[in-house]
Length: 465
Image 1 (cartoon, rainbow, N blue to C red):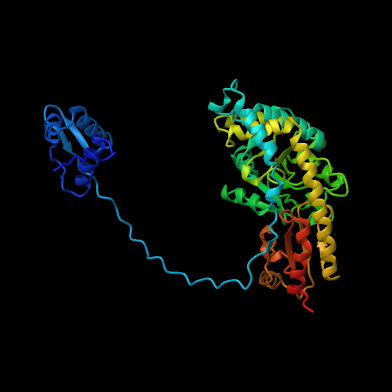
Image 2 (image 1 turned 90 degrees about the horizontal axis):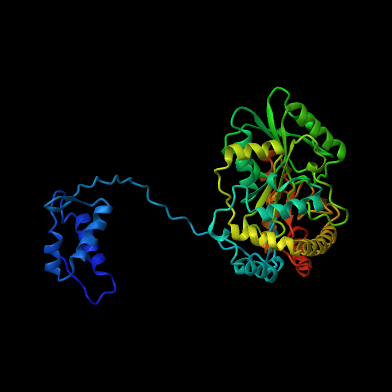
């Protein structure tokens, strides 16, 4: 029996549909049963025939019933769903509460909420929405990204990093990993291996690992990665470098070593992937020009991101391809849609065109320099035995402690005092090569006035009187 509830806000045809569906699923209606004709059921329920027709039509569309000309609708048989028995979830023991809540989290790459330019961004966003002449809001962005943003980037990169490129060489991507996903498809349709610095950024390595691309390591010296450490008996197709500020050790690659890598790339018909991840933040000297700026043979792929300057949540980055690779991208990957929403791209383009981005980077550089210098002074007062690695630029410190002070002990003692510091061992392809007395401290999420209190807690943790 079917019932109609005329006090319900549910449409009548959906009430009929739902009741028949429930009876089929509960096997009250069996395969082969014939449903009443729509005219008969409409009369029985006191509703219009179209109401019943709509309910039957929905059931037929979903495959529960099938029309038989002159007879009505017949219930169809449904295959039995396979039920996989899952092991019951074992309750986990409660995690013991920390002795102290985390007051200071020294996570690398974090930005403070005060760093985001809310008023300027909102102004540019509203201006883009108010421009009713633009039809792009309901269109797919080009496969390379918004043309205006790529034009602004080509100008910005030339002025600040010496990167010479046309907008057609720029691809807007959804972050560093999005850029590397594309490069894996462009560079590795066949044989070849990829080389990483050792240590290097683990989330970049992850992309090549997931694509099953063989990898080799380059050793480092005081000038950064060494091209002579690349294997001579294997075809190296690409090399991942952080020449302006080696990640995570902070080595700045001099011009002689840069020339050596460029010559190696030409000789081996290989590409150098330059990750210029934090070049905006050189505090006491001018930043080094990009490796791409001295490339005369189209061997350097330049990668950049807005995660360290605007916001990591935007998921917006870019890469500059050499002319040959840009043409290959057009030929082979033009059906890929740009993964960054057009509205964010166009707002960023206007943000840059109106000078807000320049002012934002200057403001952040000033704030981060104050935090960097204050934290450096405070750390030196902790103990003369602490060696600060990677200072004068960037967004983090590596601290090397005396050998008897192991990383886990340092992290545990700091956490007891409400300070979270981090292990850098994930940046080594072989974690056992990471010195056991090394600690990573990010500082961009902190305000300068917080630093003395934070350092006092670390002193209590590591050097109690």
